[in-house]
Structure formats: structure tokens, C-alpha cells
Image (cartoon, rainbow, N blue to C red; front, top):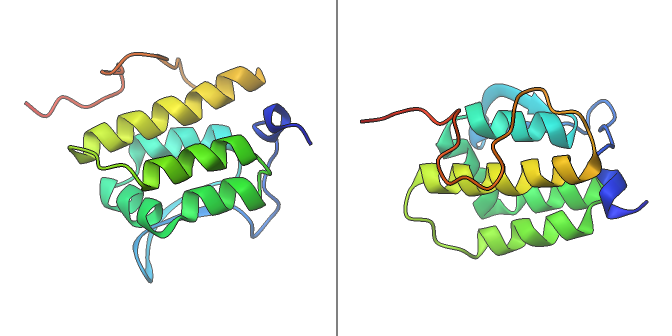
Length: 126
């Protein structure tokens, strides 16, 4: 399977990505495709993003379930990067994953503002 085709792949039952904030603390959120994964990145608690990123869970799921070696490599780089805030982490993760979805030609469930540091979906915390 080509990496570009992996964005179209849907995880089989039981192979979805389940978001946790810590061991045993399930958020109730999951994703069975890269498109769903991108959508959940926007919504899930940032603590969950840090938890999974630090453990290498994103890269492992993307590599082993979706078979996308390129995106898995990008997730490894994220794991080795220090982000100034949870929102910067969320924005960067979302932009990279949604760009991959866009490259695949997969229809997205919402309008995706690619290449903007302040996406329209981002909450205003001021």
C-alpha cells in the first residue's frame, strides 16, 4: 500500500485509536480513520495529546494500523519536539494530519484551514 493510500484506510474493529488522558482514563473518544483522527485532535483534551505523543502511540498506530510510514515518521519528530503550549501542539498535530488527509483526496468532514497557525476552529481563550 502506498503511503498516500493509507489515509483512505479504515481501521478494523478493535484497531481504532482510543484516546486516553492517562493509563486507564479513557476519554470516550476514538478514531478509525485518519480523517476521524484529525477531527478528534481538534476536540480531545490536550492532556490526551501529550500522553499519547510522549508514549509514541500516534506513530505506532499510524505505522502499524494505517500503514503510513511517512506520517509515522513525522509523529516521531513531534515526540522529540518541545512545544511552547498545548494549543501549539494541537495546532501542529492537526495541520500535519489534516494535510495528509487532504493529500489523499479523502473528503473531510469540515472545512480545513491548511497552513494557518490560527485555524478557525481554534477556541478563543482570551
